[in-house]
Image (cartoon, rainbow, N blue to C red; front, side, top):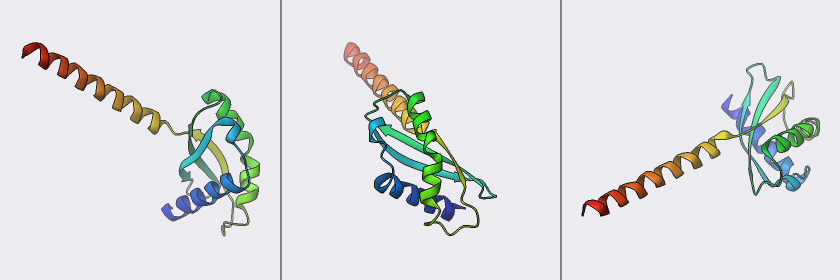
Length: 118
């Protein structure tokens, strides 16, 4: 399954560069693909840098392109069934940013506390 997930991720990333322009949403990248065991559906996770619309608007716009992505994928994948795609925002980047900010705030607070006690 990992091989199929990675192959679909590579193909989708290529399609994003060559065939489907989403730059009006920001800089879109696909980060992960999770294909169902029956290969009939796949969850595609994406992130967006320099957002030009809200997360909800971006998600609607990307999901409107599901058929186009599937059409471009078909000749490049050698699978019995080309999976139906669903796009989801990858929360791990946002979560990672939150954790980093919290850690920085803790460090700043410790530095303040240390300087008061010196």
